[in-house]
Length: 251
Ligand code: PGA
Image (cartoon, rainbow, N blue to C red; front, side, top):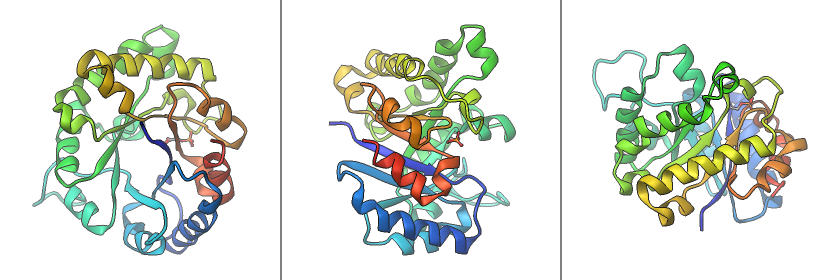
């Protein structure tokens, strides 16, 4: 059975103290979330150690928002997958559209990051999604298909089986505009079909595919009810424990 997952991507928000308080509030409230939902929070690098300590012993898993594409060495400002794993993370978000757009993250780099993360026992949350002009031109399937082919399909089936996919249409991220559940389900089904084509249908049935992009308490239940939507990657709404927990309780 594939896992249901609700993950909070804090992006570049909160002070260390605010982040620790938020993590504690999420851990305390998680008791009301159905037990078959995995809850993940992804704070900034500086917060990982105290946040991991704050949620130790709870059901909350910690994720990083990125990792380096080299294992170690003279790469000023970078943080290695091994460091993230050692600091208490079990997941790492890779290929977020903000990283692709603002930091020139290429498929080639992402394959390296995926392999390094997997070698450290981290589960990558691999983000895919089209821009508005790509959707308007009817190219969204081709764009997402290429993002899968160029990165995920470079991995062995064993490696790829550890990956969680997040479909995040760029036009819905932080905009307040959410994909309709029909739009999201359509592309989630396409992603699962592509996985089946590459790795087989048993494999595809086991992979969790999350929706991200202005997911909030008011729309989460409808999105999560879709057969190929296995949870959410939540940005803005993950910064308030109450909203994040309300989304996780939508299952
Ligand atoms: P949002 O961000 O929920 O604020 O739209 C989602 C994401 O970028 O992961």
